[in-house]
Structure formats: C-alpha cells, structure tokens
Length: 232
Image 1 (tube, rainbow, N blue to C red):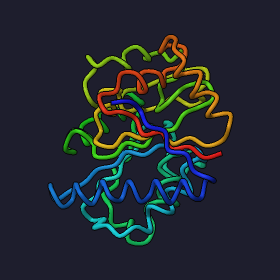
Image 2: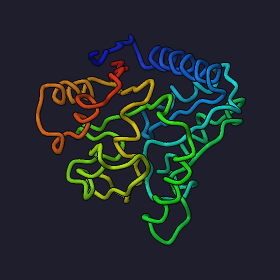
Image 3: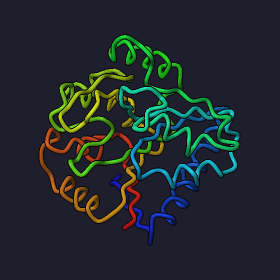
C-alpha cells in the first residue's frame, strides 16, 4: 500500500477533516478495546487541528494522549509541546484524557527518557494514532539531520520507547519516541501546511539518504502507509 495525499482548500478545512478522521479511529479503538491512544507533535501547525479534535465527541476518559517528541524544558516553558497540547487540545471534555508527558523534572535528560519510556510501555501497542510534523530540513519527530543518535533512533532494532537527541538544528536537547514506536500506528499521519513544506515533501519522496532527510524513514519504511494531510 502506498502513502496517500489528502489535499484541502485551506488549513481550517484540513483541521476539521483530520479531526474527523482521528476521532473515528479513536472511537473504533474504544469500542473494540476499551481504550485508545494518540501521540501528537508540536510546533505552530497543529493548533487548529488540536482545537478541532478537542471538540469531537469521544469518551475522552478512555484516551491516552502523549507526545511524539519534546524539548527538555519545563511544562510552563513557551517552547514546550506539553504546554501547546495543554492549551489547545486538553480543553473541555478532552481535558478528561490521560496525558503522558515526555519531560520530567530530573537531573539529566537521560533519566527523563527512561521514566517516560516506562510510562509509554504501559500503553497498548501499536499506538492507535500518530500525528507527525515535518521541518523544512526534512526532520520529523526529533529525528534531525546530524542528530547525535539519529541512526539509533531510526533503527527498527532500537526498542519502542523514548530516547534523547541533540542536534545543531534542534535548539534544546530533545526527547523523542523511537521510529519503532511510531511506524506501525494504526493511523499514521504526516500533517504539513504551506507550499514550502510540500516542496520539502516532494524532495524527500524523490529519493536520497535518510540521514539527509530523516522523514524519508517514515515515508519509505513505516509498516503503516502514511496519510499525508496538506493544505496551502
């Protein structure tokens, strides 16, 4: 099965369409298993989607929300993905969801990764929904070109869980779910907006090394075909 591109007229229509699709997957999981899980990404792109999803009818008390990746900064830091999700997704009925942060107040980022991995391990696998973003440099999650643990993060031999990542383009040290944690989600989404991101996507799809554009690992090697949601 090939990756599928879903194009929308604008970002508002994309947010609503993606929220509908995600809510459907989560509702099916709850009906079949009694629980559901979703891992989301940060940045400015998902804000509209988060707000749309928070308004969907779900038994949110049975949903576990976690992050694809996070900066090693406290939850009240303006650059925290935790804060972004708290302010835009975990609102109204959606505030009843169980939230598993990646950042922990620990002496080292390695210790935070170990604690987060333990919590994530208690969530049923594979994840029901994973929403990825993509940078203009071709990174996704915290799989950055030049990352100090990039090869390890992208290897299917690396267990499910959270590892650390440092890279010149990443700013703060990062915590990220491994490729093995993400690539077999029931619904695997790449959410991008704007022509520049579409150009980056086309470059990634044209072929080349994963180390140059790590999003290629997801597009080419994920067990689940990627649903690409794009709007200009």
